[in-house]
Length: 150
Image (cartoon, rainbow, N blue to C red; front, side, top):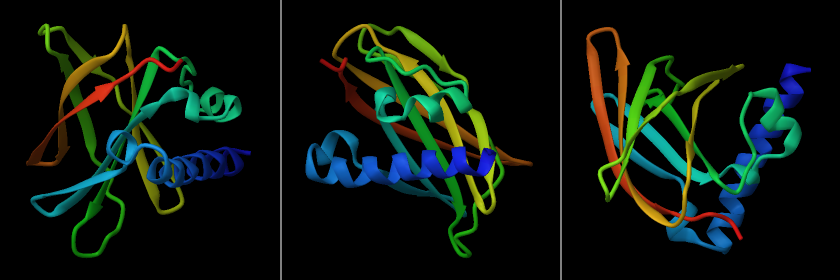
């Protein structure tokens, strides 16, 4: 059962990547940064891109007022998924800071870290995500304008 649910989230995210390339490449396209020995992939998307079943399976809220942050960390040489600790914050232009609570999703050789960010309206958010494993710590910083779905 869990494998089906995980496969559904992977299919949803793959479909999102395809759709984002066709619809809004700047706003939704997956991005990758190499930090130390890691390739960190990240994407922020509307939570409504998830099916209701997938959202329920992972305890995520589907709402036009919720964004989903998806982080995956791969070893830059072997490209194997890494089990790490992911934490972070999102800060808007008014200086309001929201702590991001990431949950780890593991299935076979894939590992994802998911968090949600509530939205009040169209805003530019600055993300600061810390990835840790043992004594190694790297910080990913990026900004993205997020919208409430109409």
